[in-house]
Length: 326
Image (cartoon, rainbow, N blue to C red):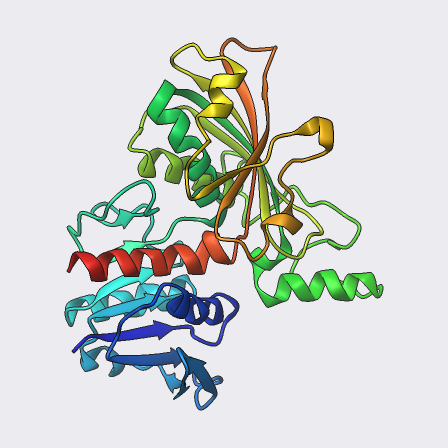
């Protein structure tokens, strides 16, 4: 009997996870939906059956679930993930709490497999996921020498508060989530600033890229920017390759990969956009061109749904792989 729990089931990502359960045909004998006391008692449909959301308490992990998928924030994960782990659960966590911990797997299913030194598997940062998916074919074929990111991140990455700031800002109301208005504006500021001048989001992308690709010495830099777009992140990747490559060879590296959609016909105004990526499972790649200022360096633009591939979908893909492996 396979028992699965979703923690944070009523949140933006949690509700998408529930949708993904049906899409990925998650075969569970028992599904439990968990949330804070505020959302407990709500009724949600999961794979055609109605479930009542239960409150997450310190007694909950004693129910001994086989798998627990969490999207309830870092503090909740810090408190509860080890409790589920101690009671035998494999935990797939969508927060930033465990990503860089030694012994914790940081997984994008198209790229790497969990080793399970510990039973907590971390879901990477949303922008990192789509970026490493785009980088992996280049790493395999040419090797990577250097990576520099500039992100254009949608407000849904900040949850309902970000969406509210965008909507209310259009009506002239002051922001409650961001330090400045996001409507009709761009903020080069995601998460807190660190002593090195980078934001925490930028440092996440640097550290997580090296860990997922298993390239700890790879030089990576990032500038992360919040833009007035509702959903789907875009990332400009400037990448220097180890082996010499032509623009056409780089473009061909992205062809015939099921989880990547190549959209690269600038003469006909065809390139990835957030609108096109929203609601789609693939990472969209395009605007591929040589960087003439640096040797063997290329620009690659990618867009992906940050709530799907960047969070819920990636987590459920991990769950599906683990269930098949077990």
